[in-house]
Length: 119
Image (cartoon, rainbow, N blue to C red; front, side, top):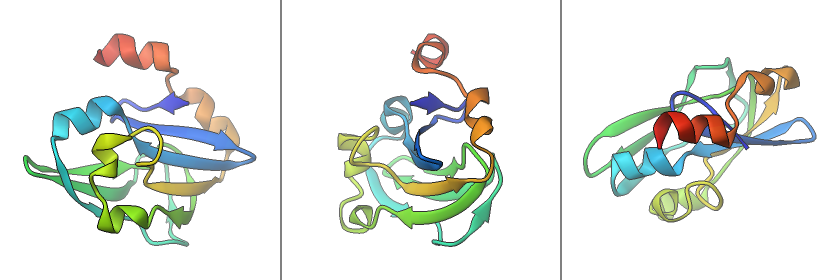
């Protein structure tokens, strides 16, 4: 699992990345009440807005940690946005992306670096 400065995580397997927000991010946002998922087939660059989380406190953009094409979204979140709070780094994933450049993941932080910065 790799992490961004803007509190997204990504796990890559065979050129496909699963993306979500970190436990830190969901805690800062509070109770998630709505998730706006990206459009399947959309091409994004690293750092592009890909999704939006709305909580009882605020709305927050979720950025793509890598460039690529959105190939799947977590439809379960449409009816159960609280999954982002309950299991942000597992079942609360947001989207899957086919990486344009798999090497791009190497620029992201590992868990130790992320936690030392934001814990």
